[in-house]
Length: 250
Figure 1: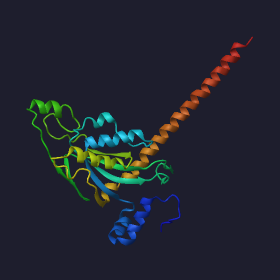
Figure 2: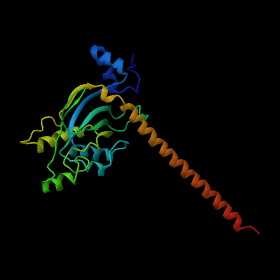
Figure 3: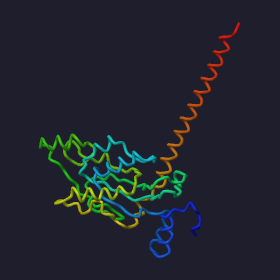
Figure 4: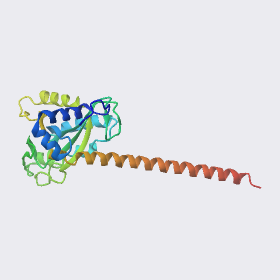
């Protein structure tokens, strides 16, 4: 039973509890998996992911991608975004173990082995594309320029597939929708940035563990830095004191 008077309970956790009361199937799966699922998913282009990543670089969080790595993906190809932890300003973040000073959403990003066209709980519909390497323009503008998306023979690159975590201002999703409206006229952008409202259980399976692991790793590195810094300061003080005594010895 959730304690609604607990000041550390987030709005997302309250909604999860209420959904269990009115949706028997959700409650059954919630008990089976033991965690809050991703509540939604989006299909976005890598160009859009770069926009989210730029915002991630500006905030105080730990979750973003190397910009130079994203630039190696074909910006017109698609990746998948899953809605993870939605934290409002003033709410408690159980992973950072602190009160939030901002609104943010922490998401899982999946880098698929093809062009994502639809998203379901159990699978992702992918279109497998192949470029013509004989075309000089295609070779220069696609294959050479975006090695994370294309192999030298024009086939889709599987080496850069996988997943990661990103954290950004949820208002950025509206900005992505505006990008589609502005640049998608006359093109088939129907699935892009369209929110797919459904629980994604299996996709969430290792997410919480990975978030905790990343934060713990960062904190340990910071503690190591502080420890080394203090050791250097103590050594410097000892050396100064020793040098001072030596200078005044008879």
